[in-house]
Image (cartoon, rainbow, N blue to C red):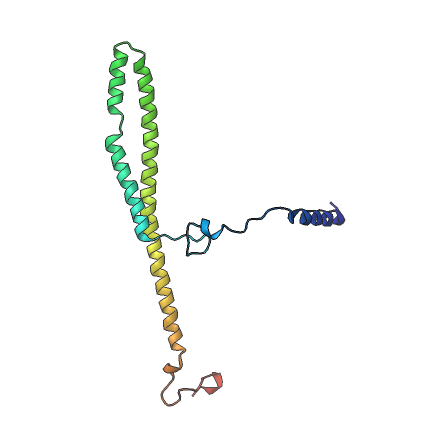
Length: 162
């Protein structure tokens, strides 16, 4: 591609762009996070814990109430009696068991991830708090109130050392 051709393509693209619609942001009334900048995500430790707890409860409920063992038994009995429905019911039961396993795995993953997120973000908060407080301590060392007695306004440099 020649340089002139490249410049021509760029100019053509620039002309077309002015006629296209461009969406910069959602209107204020359509923003779900009013009070925060667009795109900001806010979550608290309480929110993460609640989500993790609900996923854990759902896992437990599914484990207790949604297991297809009785369907397996009924399908076997129906099949033994010579009814074709037994094999069909067994197929549905097997499919249900696989889907249930996937759903329970997802619940466990969500619960574990919320616990992990809570722990990691708590550690991040502590680390940031320590870092900020150490900066504040360092800043105090440069404050004039920490100057040696008798010379509160004197700035010490390499030539001024005693």
